Structures are given as C-alpha cells and as structure tokens.
Image 1 (cartoon, rainbow, N blue to C red):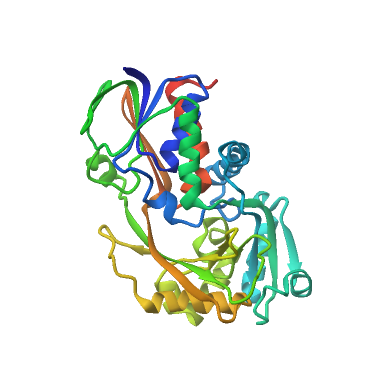
Image 2 (cartoon, rainbow, N blue to C red):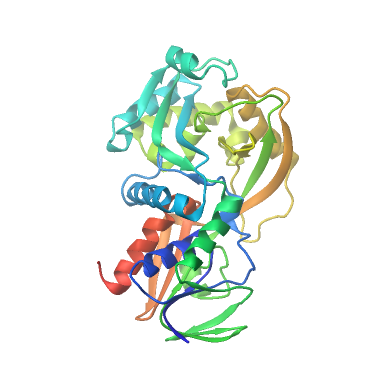
Length: 373
C-alpha cells in the first residue's frame, strides 16, 4: 500500500503532524521503533505551557497548540487535569520582572496579585514564607502525559491513520522508507526523531548543534490533600523561560539568584509543580546537557528541587513515590525544521516544548508541504 505521507516517530510531534495531515484527507502512516511512547513525550509534566514562552513564533505556537489540545482532548478521552499557571514571586526583583511581563502583549489576560491578594486567594497551599505577590495566567493547561499520548495516538488511529510499531526506519529514500518490517511507500516523508541523533540525518542534526537535555523528575504525594489552582512556578522560572528572561527587567532577579542560589542555578533547577487526578504532584526539574545522558540521578539535585518545593508550597510530610529522568533534544533554537529534499522534511523540537508547541508545528509543516488550505 502506498501512502500520501509517512511520519517517522510517534511522539507528540509525530502525532501532531499525523493529525494535521489526516485533517486534509491524506492517507498517513506513522512508523515508530517502540511499542508505545517511552521518550520525552511521556516523561514530562504534560504541561501545555503558554505563559513564559519566548516572544514571537514560540509563543504563537503555544497559544495555537493549547487551542488544539482543548479541541482534541475530549474527543480522545484525555482529561485536562487543571488550567492556569501561578508564578509566585519570592523576591522583589521577581515581582518587578512579572510586572514587566504583564505589560507585554504576552501578559494579556494575566493578573498581577499583591502579596496580600495572593495569600488571601492561595494561602492554604503556600508555605507561609514571605512573598512579594504572584502572576496568574489563565492560558496554560495540563494533561497526564504518560496516559494522554497513548490516548491521543489511539484516537488518531481511529481517524484512519496507520501505525507501524516496533519498527526501525533504517533509511529514507525518495518515496520510500526502508524499515525492519519491510519497505513503506509514501509520496512525502516527515521525520520526527526526538532525541535520536544518529539513525537518520545525523549530519544535519549535528550542524544544528543539537544535544540532549536530562531532567530530574519526581512524583510527590502530599501527606494531606492539597488542591493546586493550576501549575506552579517560582523565581527560578524567570531565568529559565525566555518570555521572562529576555526582558531587561529580568537582570536583577538573575543577579540575585546567582548570588543566593548558585548551586540551584548550576544544576539548571527551576520549580514546576503540576497535579494529577489522584492528588499527586509531578515536581521538577533540573537541566543537564549531555550527548549521552547519565542514567544515575544524584540525590543532591533532588534535594535542591524538594527544598524549593517546600519553600513555595505547604506540603509537610510529602513523600516521593516515583523518580525518573526526563530527556529531550536540545539546541540553540526552540525548534528546527529542514527540508532534506523535495519529498522529505526533518523536524525536531529542541527546547523541551513538545507538549506546548507541537500541534502548531505540525500544522506549519503540512502547510509548507501541501500549501495552505
């Protein structure tokens, strides 16, 4: 059987391309080496992050992808675990940065809260440590990625997309994939390899200076029930997220954090906390850039993350019930897309924003190949 489009990779980026293509009525096949997703797409927070994404294309992609998530999640049986983001400002410099962010176009719809207002609304979940206030954004969403990706794939398959699992694509030729399950004929090919940087087009990937980022991730069960208003971030996120850190007003908080928390910054730590339907908290993360990520998770890094959790949230006695390493392809830009030839395109999210931007990226790629609808 010949297909209009073959997609290599069944992570969120590959699925996003499959959805965009099948909505055009194309005959699509998705080929993946694994039986089910085990990489970046299921190891993350499931955090559809809009607020704080880099101004311009990345932010626009996040807004569009959020809208697609809202459309497809109920159809695929995927629960939106919670909506919105609360960025807690622990220091005056952080509050000044949030105030500057709120004045940008990306701050539209967001609400700045004073310390008194934040405590009045969210005091039950906060640690009680002094804060300067917070930014509330209604834009962000969260799904349980370890289940959502499988449900999304099953729903896309129900739309008529063919999936070929446990199959390695050894080579891409014009109009053909050579795989461990035999050849696959397709007029067009989109390769979404995630952080596999050697199997297909290693020279192109190397030219884009892509490596891997490894994250420390944990599931934490509070000793008593707690309900988050949405996802939670704190001061370090203003350094990590380009939507904040590229503002001139971020320089004072960067300087203060370098002075006060050098170890935390050195490990690439910033706090993200999201919540699942079982009440558990997914907590992270750190950032270590390694071509071959270490399989070993240092306790001191987890301890630093947990220190920040307790500095922000009121979760005494919380217990870590799971630990794992996240991983994603990382490069100098938020994503890369390169036309290999007139029938082949290579696409990689290189910023850990797969859940947040992939649906929009998939639509852009399909538009480039087939023309805008």
